[in-house]
Image (tube, rainbow, N blue to C red; front, side):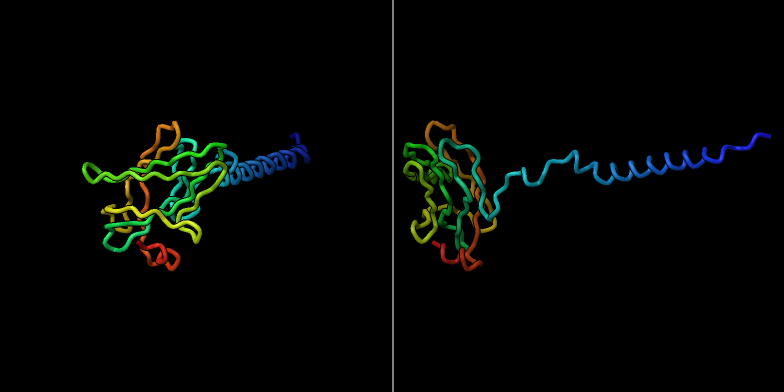
Length: 166
């Protein structure tokens, strides 16, 4: 009877161990190879929202601060103008006969921050939206088409928002 080769089983065990190791490594890191890096996902890192392309002006961290009745609210936002021309941001909210329009002129190459010590927030009268809800608002600047976006309405429960109540 022929005897088995002593080194044959060692080779097959080595190949099996390498195969199992490769499967474990690929299985535990394979998801990371296929998924999007979290640092590449754009988001608003605050309580406000960033408005998608509404023209040459960029509107960032937009939110409204209102009291518990939600009749009027103060608009807080950073409006960025990276162009060499001044532009006007047009904001519309409300429906039908209660529709309101506000315009904000932003000088060239500046950031206008509404709701800071230097610049008061913009008072929006008759929003009729209680804190915790979203107010649909239309933003447009320059030749851009503009965009309708849901803006969060917050209350003054946090100290830094309490100072921004209308």
